[in-house]
Length: 438
Image 1 (cartoon, rainbow, N blue to C red):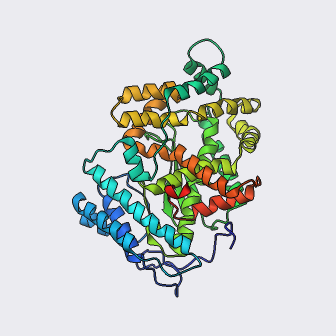
Image 2: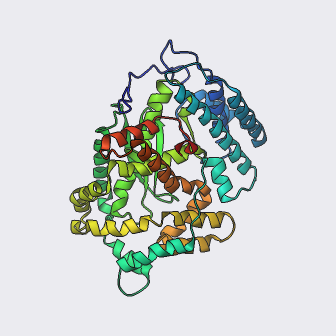
Image 3: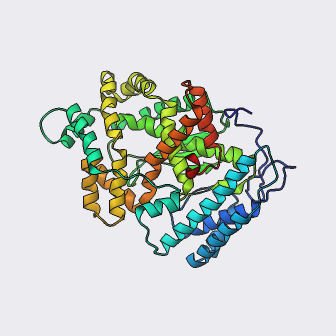
């Protein structure tokens, strides 16, 4: 079966338990009991950490059991260690057709469980350095960059935005011309979502019932969030606390929706939960290796759906006019933003120094202003993100770079879009870990 033809007939849903089951007659699952223990463990940790369970659409009775039990962290830590050991001892089924997928599943369960154990330790007060934490939770460590590396990029940006006054003031003045007026935000987002969905559906076969709802919110530490609901539905929230620039519309439409988080979750639900009956994929532990894959594919998915020239042409011809922004300046805007994008790892450095106790919140915001070109309000919002999500920040840029390298290495020299989409969809539909991308 082609990697692009990912859908088969939807299998039955058990209404008695809410667990999505594989077709009758499928071979016994040697990991099913282990997988259910993993689900229960994640849900139980979620009773201690409000951010931990990002999505769950499995059996309702398992959630109720976790809520009623209120197991203490010491007990959950012991269960995590025991479960990790039991996964390591579990034998793979004797199969040839999908042996690789079973091997990836076992690795996934073992590494995800280890991350749950690490998060439990953190909730108990265990202190880890930024890099120790990211390795324990996300199976990856971001590279370290020096001030000089960022300064070299900022010098190029300084030359690109000539004039009097500090660079940040000139940069803010330049970007002010590209803010989406509040009364036009929804129209711009809806147009971006339609375009991303249409382009994704050229290469990815999705269930007819999939849907994507947008809400506008305030008071959050993030700019956008996908809350996957199950049954192929997502609620996307867009934070309107700060000005929304024209590039964010397509970024969020792709990242949160098509072919990003929404498509990722739909394909996992369809291929692994419904078709195979693997219950561990009906729960998403946010602080786990799965998040690097999720964020990395969501960010790289923007480039897959809209390579630079396609993106500039679409925004110039469609989104800029809807936003009432001068379309003649589209290329100028993206030439500047391409330089700013090269500063993305500055955010990691600010988080690393802040969470390691080398700088305080004010100094972290100062760093983000100076080296990540974030306006003060945005920098302060980002520090709040560090407080809430800590080393999660690596999943966006390092995740994108690892996914990009993995997909493009497998595609080779073929410059046409279809092979890239095929490899991208294959990754979205599998339990591959970050360490498996290298």
